[in-house]
Amino acid sequence: MAVLDKSSKDSLNTPYFMINEQALINNLEKAKQLKAISGAKLVLALKCFSTWGTFDTIKPYLDGTTSSGPYEVRLGHEKFGGETHAYSVGYSDADIEAVKPLSDKIIFNSLSQLNHHYQQCKEDTSLGLRINPEMSVAGQDLANPARPYSRLGVKQSLLDLSVTDKVDGFMFHMNCENKDVDAFIKVLDHISSTFAAYLDKLSWLSLGEASFLLIQATQSKS
Image (cartoon, rainbow, N blue to C red):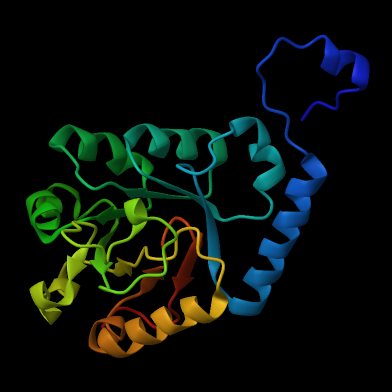
């Protein structure tokens, strides 16, 4: 990343983004500490921050990227490396063909999407399903799966244990812009009790793009 003095900054055309590299590193050091304490993997949500000029700074700290569409999958695979996670609220057949060779994990938003694409990609990557816990601490309605008429993820009433024959992991995304750790813990407790029978059969659990967490289970999928 280039270091600019005052004279060079004054000569730049506006508008432009200026990133404080030391502030970024300070945050990444906190991420490093979280990884060490929790055993979780951390992946960069490209929907939130896709400035690839910073990727060389970020790479030593994080384990890969997660995306919300095929172009972000390609960006993460080509420019960041590590694990590449693909999520979308809806994939076309062409989307799946584009992300399959680039992705370590493909996460579907609905049972219909999982069933439609399962044969197309079951041999190529680890598959996951987004779950709607019907409880959320998200700071905005756009990212709140518990809002009325939400289609963000699959509700428990539509699930049965046979889904674990097709997927290795679940994604819960319900913490966007939340800054209250106690509220987040309450949601985790809800997930732990409500979905306990499923969690025991999974090999990984993603806590969503906004929380940047992927917990890799130590046991193999049963």
